[in-house]
Image (cartoon, rainbow, N blue to C red; front, side, top):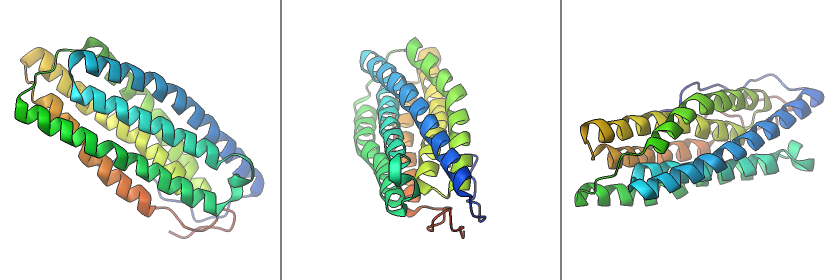
Length: 224
């Protein structure tokens, strides 16, 4: 599953004043994401543990990883690092690594649940959380990708892709939770967990490569 709303990096140079304003906006969005991810991660992991849902736990871990990615972007656009291409490269790779940290645990636990036939309980808080993420995460993700297009920042684009991935996975999570609660389709829960693992690896690889993002400084102009 690819994250929707992909944007190409603009080729026109960005004026220093505009660049500084965009950097401030990127920091603000990342602070908002950090707050949202902290609450989302706590609720998802707690609900997942109580319900025995690997999909919910995996979703919560994904939220925690997204929160760390937000911290990376805040670091990237603070102080002298605002204009540092070295900081951009470090931030991009750190954001990519967050995807790779998620996949192994969720994949192993999902396979174990499928093989063992473990049935997760219905989780009303989990369903409510999934709906909340479906509404809020696309707004944050699209806003960050638009800023990334002007800044020429693969790191910011990667964080935005994580938000869009979160929204996509929230939809899959909701289907799994509803299927388990209404039809007793217990296998949907670990199946969604496997989906989370696969998509995380794909998105991590694309972020590591900086797909769709220029490698040069946005102040000097970009090439795609």
